[in-house]
Length: 113
Image 1 (cartoon, rainbow, N blue to C red):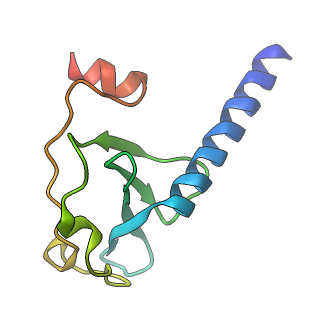
Image 2 (tube, one colour):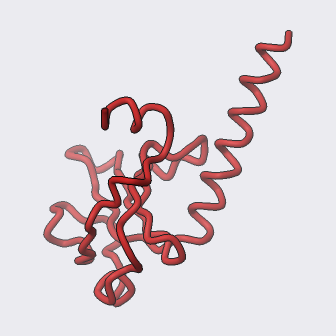
């Protein structure tokens, strides 16, 4: 029973984090899949200069996240992302120098070793 409760609590916390990410972020790109039904969204958190990636605006949790060094480049804050890009070249330009000292989650830490 305790294991089930922990999994449920973790899932709930992931959902809250995903909803908060969507609420406070700026969409950099919403790239449509080949069938046009599925898409991937890349968001910028201006306060932390972190990028998050979610599939189909899923609020179950963020798929992955990367922290960029320093503050966001001014290019990141200008303009508006297309509703559904079909090529990465259509997305907002937003340079990122990855902050290798700041990783999100056990998975990223394991991969970086």
